[in-house]
Image (cartoon, rainbow, N blue to C red):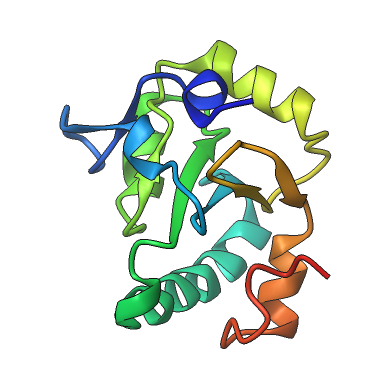
Length: 150
């Protein structure tokens, strides 16, 4: 399933702003998308988010990898204010908060049973690589074995 079918046409670029990016720009061979299921009310998310930010920023600093990995927040925040506060701590994209049905569909599709959860997809076709990307980041914080297909 293509990324646009999974995530919709547009993703939010910055917390509290209307600026968007076309989801289709994330697709391509050798590119990967992490769906980050998280919420402001979730204490374990507060512990993992800084690790993911570090991984993301380090990955983006490597010129040949800069476009190869993107993260999309799929928020379970209780209201738009909590979403804006939570998303404001992150340097990546987000499924717009208004897309509650799409969020429910994604949680069902990837069997999200707890937070935080990071699902890694192949951006060329939307296929699942691993739903344990959070563990992979803990085991491989430098991303040496990314995209963890083994």
